[in-house]
Amino acid sequence: MFGRFVERRAEEALSDTPVVLIIGPRRAGKTTLVKKMRNPERTYITLDDQTVLDAARTDPVGFIRGLDQAIIDEVQRAPDLLLAIKKSIDEDYRPGRFLLTGSANVLTLPKVADSLAGRMETIQMLPLARAEIAGQHPSFLERLFDGKLGSQQNAIIGDDLIKVVLLGGFPEALSRDSERRRQDWARSYLTSILTRDLRDIADVEKLTELPKFVRLLAEHSGQLVNYSQFGAGINVSHKTGQRYVGLLEQVFLITTVQPWFTNALKRMVKTPKLHFVDSGLLATVRGLTFDRVKADRGTFGALLESFVFSEVQKLMTASDIRVMAHHFRDRDGHEVDIVLERDDGMLVGIEVKASATVKAGDFSGLKALAEAAGKRFAFGVVLYDSTDTVPFGDRLAAAPLSCLWD
Image (cartoon, rainbow, N blue to C red; front, side, top):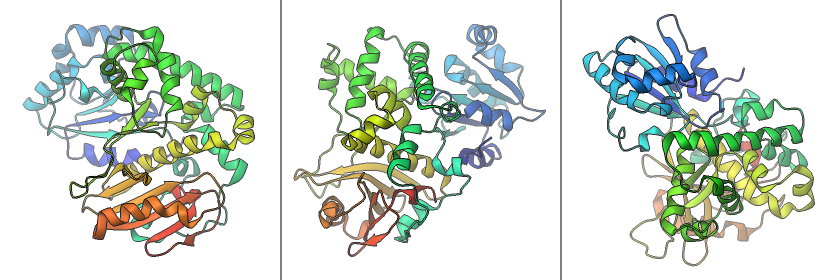
């Protein structure tokens, strides 16, 4: 069993907060984690059991009334339970009473959005990070803000890096012995998400068109969002395309990244960027195998950028520093793949490059970000397919992709 970054944060939250909700993709390991955290006082309940689900939906207040401390798995399947939990917590505000998991972001549902404000801490749990797989406790974010990234003599590079990115982070996919079996699992997983899980949270008019819609999004992973173009791909409106993107975000298949900008400068693009949460799923949707990526390395860039973005999100959970993730693009075409803003306002930029060489021109986006941010800019790095860290001027460097987990 892999150690998970989320466990420490969840234990801390349970020590002083009545309700802790762990949200993230289905099959990311949430159930395994909460069962590990189970104790004799804390009853385990899963809403994947149809009988239990019927009881929770029929009488949510009565269902909760009999529980003193509990783990409730897949709570998005009966969102009215959150209102009943609020009532129970208001009557008995002890910390650690309820540990919940959700494979859809129930906090976006109008009925429950504000019901547990101030009573619940929400923690996101994504598929396995490379550092979790390697059993490492990473310090990448701390070193990045300090500008102290080092070379990695044992860095994963070349073909091995392609294999790591194609693996993704879902535990069940990692347990499969062959690429074909991993992609079979991924296709089955996607079918389940697009049929069962979406029905738990919304009525989707064109359910049969969703696989085509997801393939369209996969072709645009790492690019700016264009809802009109996405909707037109399945003959729906801009508004419906936007709604479908939002629903796929709610079930943690994709994520949209807001731009970083400052009102002092008017020439910044304020459009979100799209990423798939897992690079292995992205590869499956796009039909990319190791042989295809190796034969056409041009297909690797978008996969790698989504992989790095997901890794950074996972490291944000492990780190004690609090950061928000953005992207940057200005009207002159300068862009930075990932911008991290610390809670004190300091910024770092991460540019992702699939090649083994870096040139001065690869830093143009980071330089534009540094100019826009001024004194708030702490450091900028181009992560690339190599073992060496190379300085490229004031507060800029190229560093191995393996810095993310080693």
